Amino acid sequence: MGSYSGTFKEVVISTLPIAGVLLFIQLFMLGSETEDILVFLLCVAMVLFGFTIFLVGVEKGINPVGEAMGSEISKRKSRLFMVGLVFSISFLVTVAEPDVGVFATQVTALFSSMEKNALVYAIAIGVAVYLIIAAVRIVFRLNMKVLITMGYGIVIVLTLISPAEFLGIAFDSGGVTTGPMTVPILISLGIGLCSIHEYRNELDGYGMIGLASIGPIIALLIMGLMSGGEGASSSSDTYTPYISNIWDRFLMEFMESLRSVLIAIVPLTVFFTVFQRMVLFFSWRAVKRMLSGITMASVGVVIFLTAIYTGFIPLATKIGDALADEPLILVVLGFILGFLVAISEPAVAILSGRVEASSGGNIGKNTVKMVISAGVATFVAIGMAKISFNIDLLYIIIPGYVLALVLMWLGDNDLVGITFDAGGVATGPMSVAIIGTMYTGIAASKYTGSLAVINGFGVIALIAIAPIIFLGFFSIYIKAMKRRSSV
Image (tube, rainbow, N blue to C red; front, side, top):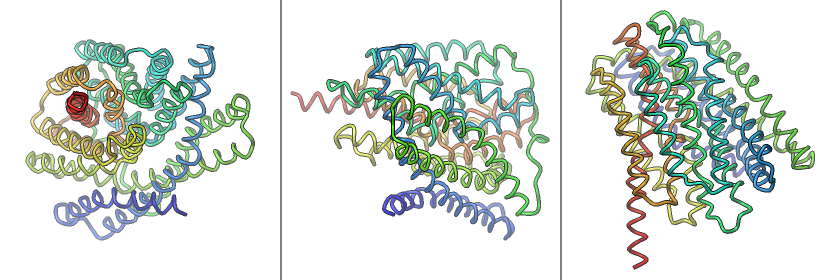
């Protein structure tokens, strides 16, 4: 019971502040009806329960498999084995990621020509390709700074020639791929790859999430070039129609969430089971423990998604619509929600805890969480100013990544992987569901046609770049402290 109670306490502490802010907006700014408030409170309870079950399931059933697979890759001399295994894991895990499903729904609501499954598979392929590069980097000790610089160099070039309608979508996709399903597996895989090399610092295992975020950006920018940016539509007639009966709403969202999770999780479970039995030669007892954990995680995700789609997303859409013409309120609200969402993301907690353990306690968990949260808060506020005044995303995102790359080269080498991983973990289901949906709601209210698409996306990309920049400055500070201590 210890793992349940401890995890539940963390989820409550991190989630209730966000729920409190949203409830305040409902009561005093939207004047919501009693039924809507009760529905929201019920959904908050479901999020707390669902997230707790999910995180315990991940810890028990998924993390050990990720580390075992990473260790097995390092033991094998076959490069084909490594490429095939990493591609399979990353593709299946990305398809199973709840963030990707939420994001794809938002995109297809504003982009009528794009098919949801095509979007999901393009993102998954992009992640898989770059995770192969990440695995090769660890095994053959390639320079992380060079790989990241080359990756974002390609991104910047494609950005300058891709249709404007695709820019926000492409950059947002780099953030949504690394949510609560993907992060623990990638971190465990990276640490497992380093585990059998005693001469390695365990911090070398970080960076897989950061590199994974580059792949889908490139993939969707290429999709944009191929499509020419056609298909952008006003969102006024693309949102799911409101269903008045609350139980019908819950049932509809539950069935849709269950279907999505089963489609995503069954292939992943089969793959893990076959790999454990045929390659790792684990006992059936170990396989059953893994299956138990995956089942728990799946149940938790279904409960969570049902609550998000029923209570959080409709509310976030209403908030965006109601406050679309209040730029000052949006900036302040963006800062508050950005901080609370980042501090509440389970993936941020997972990464921060791993960093503290891997650094021997030299880099505290709370320090990492606070730096990430401060960065996210700042950039969400910038994003709210951007959408309020129709500022071109290029004027923010390209200078942002150039600054991030400069800071990377100036900072401490041990923190490069952690810094870019932080950009992925900050963009979890809460940020996509609340801030991302609120953003599309603002765009739907203020703009029409292609302008709604151009302005409706990009905030997840800003959330992703924020901790990279803030931890980049932190990395320079750590490097200076190391120099002083060595004198």
